[in-house]
Structure formats: C-alpha cells, structure tokens
Image (cartoon, rainbow, N blue to C red; front, side, top):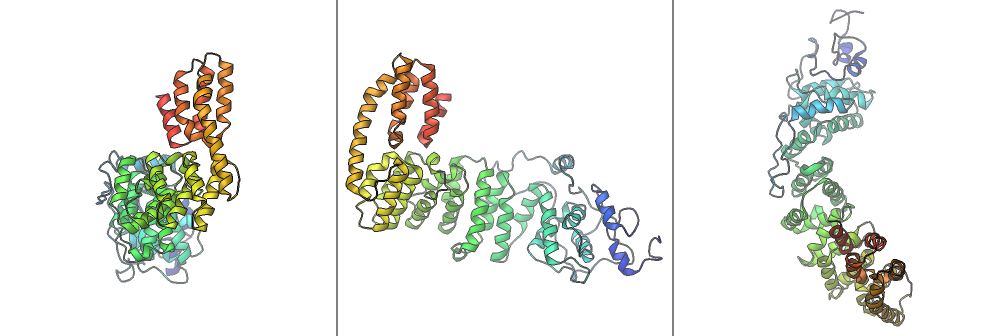
Length: 474
C-alpha cells in the first residue's frame, strides 16, 4: 500500500483524516482501536486548513472553574467540585471512551469540520469517538453544532445533518458536567428555538449546577413565548430534572421561586409539580397567595394525579388551598377541590360536602370526585347522603379519640392491637387520627403496638404523618 501523498489521490487523502499512525485506508478502524489518544495528528499536507469563511472558529471552553453569574444560584452550588484533570482521569477508568485532556490541532472547530467532510455513512458512535479525541476545546463547537450554527460541510461525502447532530450529541454527553455547564453559560442564544435546545441540555447536567443554569436560560425567553406549550414544556421537563438532582434546601428553593418573574414562576410550578420530588408541590403550594393567575397554576399542578400531593402538602399549604376552596373564583374552587382529592385530605371532607351545593356545576363535580377519592365511597352528588355520612363519621371519631385510644394504650397488648385495628379500618378519618396515633406510639407499653403504629403512620403517608415518623425515629 502506498504511503503519504505518492499514490493516494486527494479524495483518498480526505478519508485518512483520523489516521493516528500514518495514513491508511483503514482510518475508521484506527480511530476505534486507539480510543484514548490525547492528541490528533495534523491534517495531511495536501489538505490545508479551512479558511474562517468555510468554518468559523469558536472560542475554546477553558478547562476549570464553572462560574454561573446568576443571583438564583447558591454560593455553594459548585463548591467542592473536583478539578477537571482529576475528573477526566477518573472518567478514563469508568467509561469506554473519554475526552482527551489536550489537543494538538490549532482549532478544534476546524478539525471537526474536516472530520465531517468525509463522514457520510459512518456510524454516529464512531464519529463521536473521533470527536472526543479532539479534546475539551471542542465542547463549544459541539454545542454550536447541536444548535445548527456555523457553516458545516455539505459535499456528497460529508455527514448528513441528522448524522452530524446525533454524533455531536453523543460526544457532548461524554464530557464532564462542568465543561458542558461552562459552554451553556457562555452561549448567548439569539432565538427562542435555540433556548429551547439549551434549556433541555441544561436540565441534563445534574447536580447543583443544573437548576441555576436552566433558570438563567429560561429567563431569556419572552413572556409570550413561555405561554406557548411547545416552549414551556421543554422548560418544565428541564426544571423537573434539575429539581430531582438538586440537594438545595427547601428554604433556598422557596426563595428562588419567589425571585422569578410571574410568567416563569408559573412554568416552574408546573415543572416541579411533575418532578415526582415531594419538595416540588410543597414549594409550589407555599407560593399560594402571590397572585391570582399563579394561584390557579399552582392548584391545577398540585391536583394532577402524578403529583405526590399527599406526602408533600403540609398544614400551611393545605390551609392556603382551603382558603381557595372558598374563593369567589369558581376556577379556584374547582382546582382546590381537586387538590384535596389528590391529597386525600380527610380534614377537608366537611368543606367538600358543602361544595356539593356550589352554584357552579364543575365545582360540584370536583367536590364529588374528591370525596370519592378521600373516602373510598361513592354516594354520588347527593349532598344529604354525604351529610349523613359526615355526621356518622364525627360520632365515630369522638368514640375513637376516647374509648379506642384508651384501650390501645392499655397493658393488654392483644386488646390494644384490636383497638388499633378498629381505628385503622376507617381511612376516611386518617388525618384526624394522626396526632392520636403519635401519642399512642409514645404511651403504649407494647412493642408490637408501637411497631404497628409506626407502620400505620407510614401507610397514612400525609406530610404530618411522615413528619411524626421521622420524629419518632429521631
């Protein structure tokens, strides 16, 4: 096989861009076989570097600290992060392929363009393998490529747009989060669609850097854009991801929510309510009372079945929702009723029975559905039937709080377990029994009763019940 430029025409020389040990016809195999080289061989002499007009150079992302100039980020968001060199060294051991720590090419963007010039038909993973070998200076160019920025090769041998995006995304995901975060922070999106891409990438960062980065990008969106589902939904997804990965305290997160403009606050509420993190609905509900439009957004979000309202809504949030149930706005009343159904809050049962006579048919329907969810009974929309149930329930509660709790605290463990079982047979009164169960846990001499009380509080699963379990364990 001929070497150098003696027997290889210009087309074949382009196919040899990635050769690490001499130019050969097996360029792709050479790239795959040598995954951890820290440099890339310069381009063959017959193919000079492209001019700036063909492929614009982008300022490299420096390896090191990530500084997010954002008032919403806590001072400790990035504190304690390992040095990039240490992180990359560790990633060599953890992953099949990791980014190089240096590059011998003068401009990673130019090298990337040359690589894509002859990449049509290649496997995206092979392209990504080659790209990460160019080093950390490539990260801003990867981001530009995913945003569709710059001039990319369009010849018959060049990578298609779809192939390019898949390969660049694969390579992007292999770099450490701090490098990606720095590129996202330094990237100034000019359009709405660019911000939609950037905000999703930010949500994937994980750790403490994700949430402030998502918010920084989202604040650049226009209020009218945030009102459009196709813009708001990626922001919501990113916020949900970022909340799950964040370890920030609820107090800091509550302050962060209060700092956002109204339009973005509504999007944050929806994202956090969908996160599956119990802090989300709790934090959202604490913002009730800020303004009517936000209140409706919060109530609607917390009412969603996917929202873990039962475990999240403490007394403060439930009290705010109870006030909304008496609001002059039927939309607020309807949303509040749905919240109580999702939270299965038995203490609001009487108010929901009253809502069965509401002048608004949708409020009446929401109250009926909530009562069904709370009690496990279906008495339809007959308010008189529900009032009869409520009267019987109050009589039973009075007996349980006196006679049954007294029996359960006795020294006869068998009788105590029987009394406890009778109380737990009424899920439509669970929230009224929580404090009594907590007292029983501390008063009973029977270890089996204490254990059953503890498991019962966990089964009840309200924010109050779970707090008492933690208190008992402490």
